[in-house]
Length: 143
Image 1 (cartoon, rainbow, N blue to C red):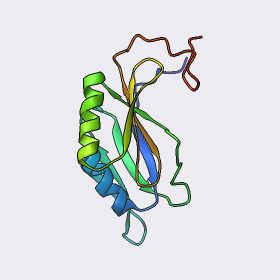
Image 2: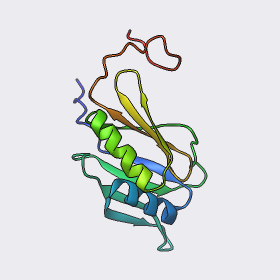
Image 3: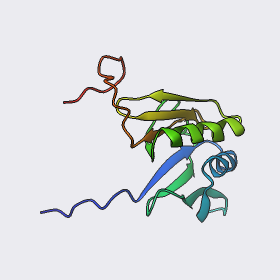
Image 4: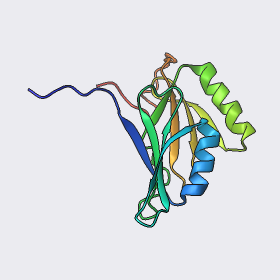
């Protein structure tokens, strides 16, 4: 019998320009850098962060121009508490000049915006809105 999973250790996102991505992610998510990862020549190509609200899970950026820019794709959805949190994130993003949307998703509210490479960032509420979205194209249906 295999051992059970124990949460998510970390999320690593590919970026095309580490310096630009660091500035953006640190400003948006107020991240605390924990580790830098230099290549053989001493050039830092990655950074790992501690992020408030992610518990023991980390967030890392890795400079990989060959795979960065999954434009319009959302490889991870970060959890937020409720509609008030979605609105607070919307206000924060507005202050930073970052275009975003707050929408009714399948079961909760979702804040959608893009990083400098076009990667779609989702902040999804754990609070449910209670509306039936099953007939809305692109929304999930219970199975």
